[in-house]
Length: 512
Image 1 (spheres, rainbow, N blue to C red):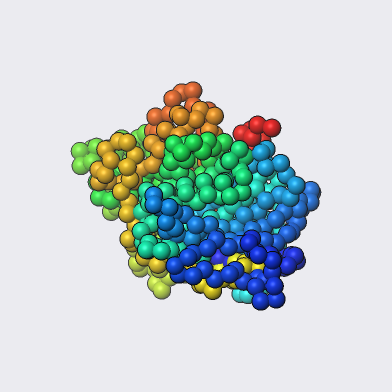
Image 2: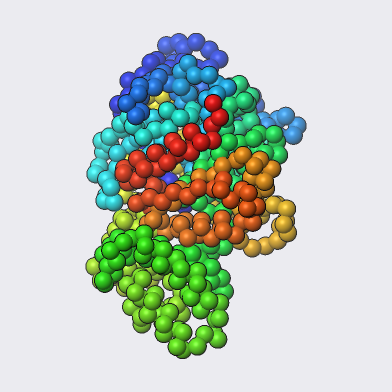
């Protein structure tokens, strides 16, 4: 997702925090020791808690702190902030550990941290604007702590993560640069905490899935064998979302999502009785007749064009005249504005269940994304209160929800073995294929929201269908679909369903 915000309210009840390398005193408790500019240090605040998951009380330790990563000369280049939740008394050799992060690029990881599978969850209104503060933070009964330890990591330039020494934050703003930084962090965490022989997982959201595909390959090459990779709202092949003139792919991969959203908003007349059967019908049309028509370009004959327009209108509710004017190609931002224009509002990009109000109804694109705007304040406030008051971490730095300028200045070049540095859309599916080929036991779970216009499920399906996996490995990929959007966990019933699916995934991939 492009921007971020997050936080939490209060309500935990912890033990007095203690820092890693020193006993707390009246002056130091709750405030990490400041690192000098020339000698950056790792710090941490350790607190103890419990949470009930599935009717079972789990006692756990929360560690909020930083780890240093170093260059080839063993000089520290960045301090990366993380919050780790580890079950007390567990056998580290058999207890899984999962590394989690959001995307952006340039986003802190408060969304997954405070909304999905961590031990705490901030309450937001479902597909509505969330009311003003104070916000409510609750124990998360859908946490994954019953299955795995959790380590939430902030990218450099976000959260409390930042460059040190002679390095600058922007040095890490790139596909490969970011991947190497996260790889070094994970290996440092494994070494410092004695977790090299633990079952290991990655869980990323949005651009975090891009990072996970890249990391799976980097870590494999470094001898870090992963048990599983969880892709939440994935994008590996950016051609599936690049609405550039001459690239017809995103119009094809987005169409099933347009149909699902039109269905949700009761725009289809008549409305099909069976949602999943309807979506399967649209899939067939999108990757069949519709794809063939677009590939013919200006050579498309009038009779075929008329048939395609009729079916597009039937599946999306958009008028035949509008579809003709778009040359049969529906840009997602235009769709956000057009679908409910007659009702005087727009639909969200991150989650099209949300609706927003623009200055007027005449424009092509929406003024803002309501799915982002309606939740950001709650996440931000709750997170800041939680980290300071309950985790006892109070550094003398501003927590950055996003890295200013990272998205605009991101280096999208990636060396993946095929045509390195060739210009074009980023595609890291080959990295994941290589990792799965070198580690045939590696399993992948792909979680999709039906109403996600940021990373539509059709794009994920297309990517894995064209990944070139050996037939013996195709069964290692599992898909899950949920009645939600990009941030699947915002809809509680979807969070519950995803947790149940992930619990089965961990049981199947964690040899005991």
